[in-house]
Length: 140
Image 1: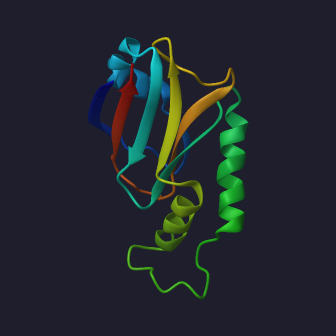
Image 2: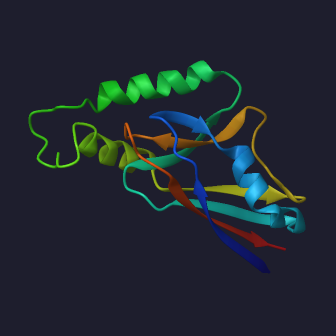
């Protein structure tokens, strides 16, 4: 079994849901050496997250942002952790709901995603800055 790992830094994104599939594939070309395996993507932050969903229609990403802002609103009176602004605690909650890592099968040297699936960086802060990801590909 072969293992490849790389830490990358993504450019800052505005708040919202952003497709990053191409950036990830570009940054870990060793995927092409794996016939059967997995790619794990881990984000090293507590106010952004990762998920896999629709990669063709941008309105899906807009609806994700709208929905998460409804279920985790800013300025809730019971939030105590507000040191970094109104988006601080909601960003942590959204990150925990979606998660900090994803795994994708690798088949015949390519990510085995569905036709309409893409990897999202979910930026939950108004000014989150650059984000660090750890990419780990392994298999035979």
